[in-house]
Image (cartoon, rainbow, N blue to C red; front, top):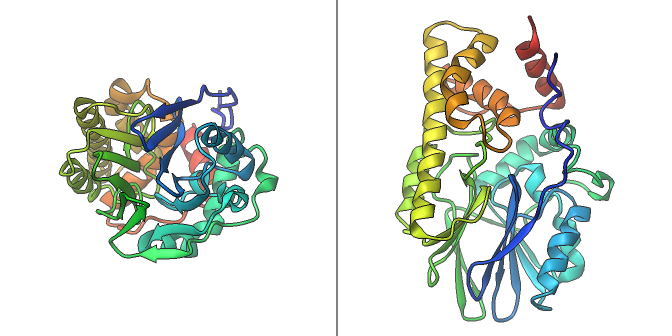
Length: 320
């Protein structure tokens, strides 16, 4: 029987957790759905990733409003994917002044934001329920090259691009005084890494740069908040293992001159026993195998996923 495309069959609501990490920081997580982060400073609030739609963002806003009435002035985009950024317009009524992104993220929005928006809406019908509330692409109002620092009153917050991985523009948010890191999809835990737009060869080095921060708490892109230094290290190592294993199978498939369907079969033999039980694995693996095969073939800049390419890839993997 043909599998439902991507996450079209994933219609069950997830249990949302809003976990306090410190006096200033919270994690908004939901059983493998995309996470958001919240930092409440002396005079304003900063959000890391906005949820998929303005309608969905209302739940996050409501939870923030049980804690503070300070204006939500700042949004940081950890990267460009629609499922993380298209809820931004919901914050306009909450005092929004800045949408911050790295240069790499801005460039990807320019290059492929429209195609990605259409592609992701078709992949995730549950997360994009209420898609009619999306006014269009989310554009940053402040673009940085490598690092900027904000002060939310006295609280120092660093926003950094430490290297490519999940995308070429990945951005993390770091509270140095509290050693709390919001990693976006550079780190996952208990969930598959989506690698369709990844720089797989660079990703492990970027994880090493994150490790050098010695975070004591970390909010991954998907999965539960990591609340001790040991849990942080486990999450970093889990992600590195996933990424390295996937790329190794891409190189093996190219060396053996396999087509995409047989590359998938080769990859499954290795990865299913290790990762087949985690959230969103079946959704992510076809896109990851496609990207690993491309990168191993010398295609360093990921090809753009369109709704048509999504379906063609899925059909090729389902063919007899």
